[in-house]
Amino acid sequence: MKTVVSKILIVVSVPILFVLWFYNHEVIDGDYSKLTIKLPNEGVAVIEEKERIRDIINSINKSPRNLGTEKPWYNYELASLIFENDRGDSKAVHYMMENQNIKIRFGEIDTNLMFKEEDFQESENASAAVMENEDLEKVILDHGTVETYSINGQTFEIIPYHQPYLDFINELEVTKGNREELFSTYVVKPFSKELYGHEYYGEEDPFYVAPVNTDKMKEMIIQLDEQYEEISRFIKEGLEDSTALLTGTETVRIYLQPHSPDFNYIEMGGVVAFAADKDVMVLQIDPRKYTEKSIKQTIAHEFHHVVTMEVSDWSYRKQHLLDRVIMEGKADTFGKMVYPDYDVAWIEPLSPEATNKVWSFIEENKGSYDVEDLTMIHLGRPSSGIPKWSNYRIGYRIMEDFLEKNPEVTLEEWTGMRADEILELSGYGVGE
Figure 1 (cartoon, rainbow, N blue to C red):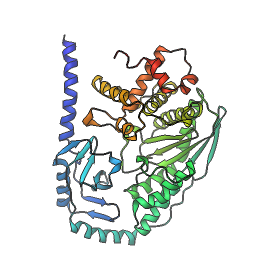
Figure 2: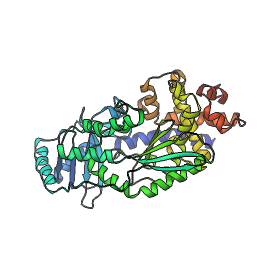
Figure 3: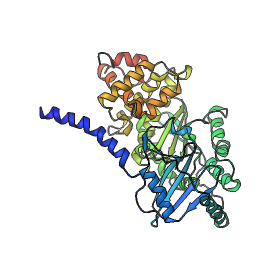
Figure 4: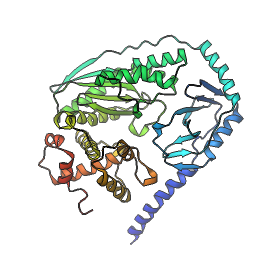
């Protein structure tokens, strides 16, 4: 009886504690002496008046908060507020231009924060001083050529793709032009053309939102260039471990890009990635946060994606929601096979209540091709009871059930199997 009561108390208390934390924790804590405001197309403001900074911090910490946002965060025009103290520590938050609110984890703060005219009068002087003193000497990268590597009969090309980002930053510094247009011109369109032969991919992709904190991005690119040998070694070791269990026949291009400094993906271990096709994977890396483990686990996950695209019918038909859920479940199952200590945050089990809600949504929309449906179960919608990464979590759970009930099916066989067949043989959802 005591055990049952304890479980009930845990189930009840966890959401209550979360709500209390969300509505009461201080988003900006500490004493800051400098605030840099980077608004798209409007230059940079630097505020060093402590009382003004405290007023802004109080507005952020004490204004009403809402779980979730009216639309996905990447559909908002975002600016950055960067707070710094005398020790050099910093804290950045995202300012939503459309409604003057602050974007935070799980939702937004209704600050309606408006900056005063004198803030930007000061910014003109600050910008002028920066331009007078800034060292605009062009950064020369040591690593920009393709590195070809073969292991277990498969060939890989590791491609540092940092120079286009530097070209964008340099052009922005010189011309003070439109940030989004310049980022599209120097990064998004050329990369799309290199991958697909056209310039139309990536314009609405959250991986390719024009960065606001370009000073930090430049620092990160320099650091990534310095760390290239180590990153390349971790990638190769991850490929060795992965191809020991499964191989494809395609030559796979692995593009390395800087992680956006405007977003904190600490739960991703400083690495976000995606497989763009059966012969392409892209890694965006934060040089301050990546680890050997996070790079190797990411390589295992994305490697399974590219092999799946090669050996299945993935490239020959349009993928619906269930296809994409099972695709992620397969990749994480493979990651666990390569690395038994594979403990990524995005496959942590859902609560029973969340599982029911997520599965009901997937079951109802499994044949959907609507990007909004996939976005909802990937990014989450707290107001609907849908946690983030639900596609990974349910996909992994389905694969667990599938392997338990079909131990005779080999890795090569289930890698190429269709999602509807995996689901049927897993028995997931039947009688639940």
